[in-house]
Amino acid sequence: MDTEQLSEKILTGDRRALARAITLVESGREDHRAKAGELLSMLAKHKRQSLRIGLSGTPGVGKSTFIESFGMLLTSLGLRVAVLAVDPSSARSGGSILGDKTRMERLSREKNAFIRPSPSQSHLGGVARRSREAVALCEAAGFDVVLIETVGVGQSETVVAEMSDLFLLLLAPAGGDELQGVKRGIMEMADLILVNKADGALKPVATRTCADYAGALRLLRKRQQDPEDFPKALMVSAVEEHGLEQAWEEMQALTAWRKENGHWERRRSDQSCYWFDQEVRQALLARLHTAGAQAAMAELSTLVAAGALTPAAAAEQMLQDHLKG
Ligand code: GDP
Image 1 (cartoon, helix red, strand yellow):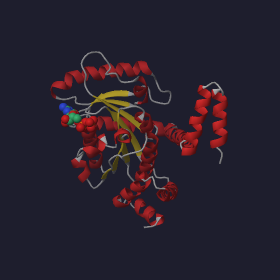
Image 2 (cartoon, rainbow, N blue to C red):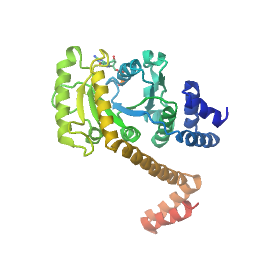
Image 3 (cartoon, rainbow, N blue to C red):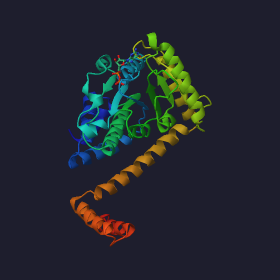
């Protein structure tokens, strides 16, 4: 199938064509990259947009369960939902946390849902690009909502937040007044904090946890561009399917507000520029990773270590010799 045919099929929402295209963007082969680039440019002309929702949370907090219940809610409302995962752990271990188990069985049988496990191998930068391109493919395929899931480790939240219109942080109920060691930076990214497992014996703990986080969010910051009462903390039960409608209403309200005020488009433009910047940086770094460059780096390091060359002079030489054309 040539690129044009593949593009046509994706635009009709054909899931097999979409899966095929995602495999293409995930490939490291040079001819595949060229084809992927051509395909993405072709599809970008149609300017289709989904609501991109990023979701983060530590393993065991209930991400899969939530996505399944929430995804089922969305499909029951007649929406088409795609689920993608950004899993940097697969970059390190070669095995994927998010892809290993049989997940989201109900949702995977829905004809209006598309679930793609995270790609394996490669570094976070590579994972980021492929995920971003997979999101773009899902948008072209006409999905109303694209859920992008990540495990709460390292920098993956930033990567996901930078490709999402909304960012959700899923937390578990926790006793005591400790805020579960959630990093400030991650809290700052969240538009909604969802305290999951607010059911059964955990409900009172969830209520307290939710109040703690609501308080923390109020102290943390007020985003100029958002309505007064955002970001919010809500309670949900993915298992009992409680609180999901309310969470969806909040997401829609925030989206509508941002769209009306031009913040939605601006965020997308800022994100595109962010990724442009990242691509340039990575391409530059890649040039320093060739065998020749690495050898020169080692040689210059020896000179710097011996005091024969200053770090700045050595860097200058490195850039002159290896970043040209
Ligand atoms: P993930 O690792 O974040 O994807 O978490 P999972 O969705 O695999 O859930 C981890 C465990 O928490 C499983 O045993 C789930 O059944 C349980 N769990 C998930 N959501 C809820 C919930 O809303 N309430 C309760 N009580 N348990 C839940």
